[in-house]
Length: 237
Image 1 (cartoon, rainbow, N blue to C red):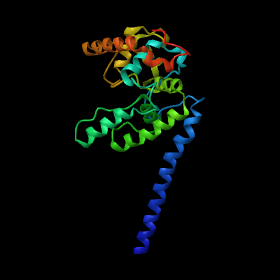
Image 2: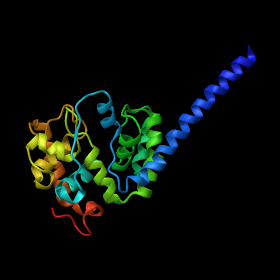
Image 3: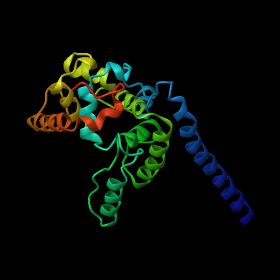
Image 4: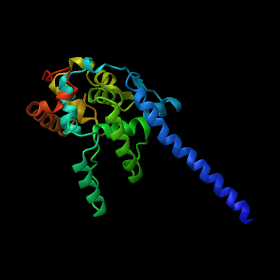
């Protein structure tokens, strides 16, 4: 009986070891590939596998409004051009809040969101957050900031019916191409990112309009913080 239990434990440990090895190997191997190959996210794959609608039209970063890029950075991750994938100060504050039993605020950088969407799952958990950190550091090491932003803007969920990427999001909300976004449309699209299933930038609430105006002011004032995603110079704001 004891021998049988030991064999069962060994089989379980071997299976867990294979799962862990795959979980480590897949990001290590795929991240360099994404220098030249346009990735598909886990949520996108989930919709495809389950037969739900999924729309994504890839756009090169040069075909996307600089106003949107600046608005995304100033709204989602103001230190994007300065950190190495993880905002350590924000992460430290988040850990302290967690240890004190306080409500979490997130502390996810754009790179951490890319790591989650490409390799992890969406349900919030301490385990997922712990995995996001080394993945984000590795992604930032391998991929240039401009490529990370390009991937982010093309895999972010931007609509309630499987619209992924800024091209699909801008078309659904305003019927325009992403290079033609003005400040109003760009910032309203950004306000939808925290909850694209409920927030509709094409029919914004008063709260969304107010937040969009705040994002615009920040982006206009601190647009130089987004220069790392420009094409060799300042963004055209």
